Length: 276
Ligand code: FE
Ligand code: FE
Ligand code: ZN
Image: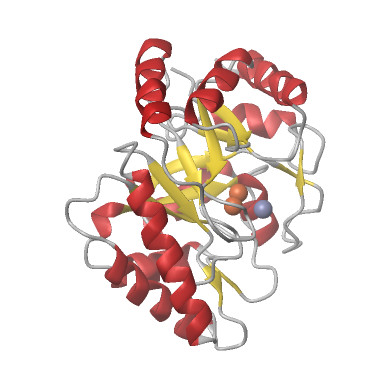
């Protein structure tokens, strides 16, 4: 089954996101666990969640992806910010456990001048404090474009984090096509080579989701500006190869370039037409 969906607003709850997804031809979705800039989350609505779980079972939604607020920085130089990020993370995981067995994606962080090694160590230390054996949620590290002092700009940096986490079977990776292309992985001309590198450094068994975004900027620009599918430097043909690649085709794909719902529906229709 082609698992495809887009980023949706969580303001009306899980059931509403499930129904919206089905109405635009999707069978999965991504959402922010709380305001993307951080702050309080709504308390869990257990009636909404149980209605959503029933609806999912009946409509073929078998995985969803939560996205942490992108300001969450567990490798900040400021101990107070790190503590706040850790507590937000713990609360998000607690909430995700109400919809068991799904995915929670986060940006590894920005080391803000402390150096990637320090950042990597802080990220791994915090993950070791957060992850517990009974957890059913899989935490995904997102591959980043390398703008500013972002950690996760290379497969090696992601691998270093995974290596330092004890319960690393609770971790996976979300590959963002815009980010890796901007970071200097040529998924347009050498998709096989990039996936071989991923497999050698991280292991393809760790790859659990794809953020499917075109890029406004040229290869290796380290910019991170998303574009709708086919509208940027990656282009439709490359996306056809990506969604059909034997190592990728069974993963869930998430469109996240801001778009209206009918725009997302058109992107999904396009991708379905490219699917073999
Ligand atoms: Fe992201
Ligand atoms: Fe992304
Ligand atoms: Zn991005």
